[in-house]
Length: 65
Ligand code: FES
Image 1: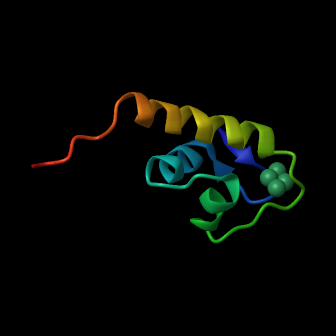
Image 2 (image 1 turned 135 degrees about the horizontal axis):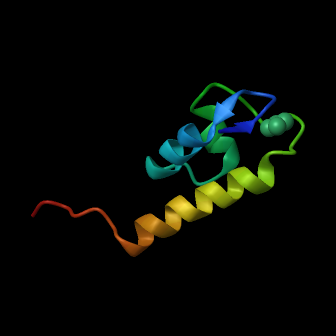
């Protein structure tokens, strides 16, 4: 599913960016070399990032000792 029509950014790309450290929509889009334009995607993109970050917080990756 396309999250951002202006930049043709997909939900999977936003989720991957969040899982690899992007904390904001701007950071997630920057991974694709893009910036927020019209802003209509912001609520959905923020929700996706929050969901991914909550999932990481609930089940943090194990660190080898
Ligand atoms: S739809 Fe994402 S900036 Fe316009």
